[in-house]
Image (cartoon, rainbow, N blue to C red):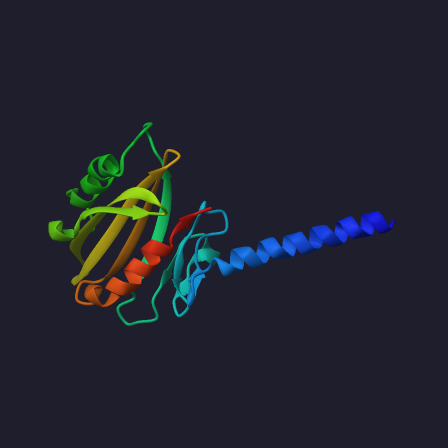
Length: 178
């Protein structure tokens, strides 16, 4: 009986250590806003409101400009799809479509380029658009892992985008796969 009790106590202690290790991985002053079943961790500042309870991985800043970030995961339709191929075949045609809600879509080529997301090679695309009379600026970072396309999207009013450069970098660099 003592052996069983000892084994159970040991298991409880080990589970506690694992839980503490996961909590300690959360960057300082940030919270994980990834949905429960997501295969990644998405960290945003503690002051942001999480969307995770609704099943969406993301959060929104407590500011008037409603800056927000989300991450989506989409099964790649073809094997060995690259981030650039996904952008060219899926995203860009949708954004430029005649009936797209993104009026006056414009690429900000100088801010696009190579980056990483979760330790994987990625592509960064930055663009602006107008919706309901307001201009927005968006940065999307796309990577592919295990034939799943992960897209991190940061959106805010175009005039406020520059205020978030440091925050965007913190969010990008803290992102990790589970």
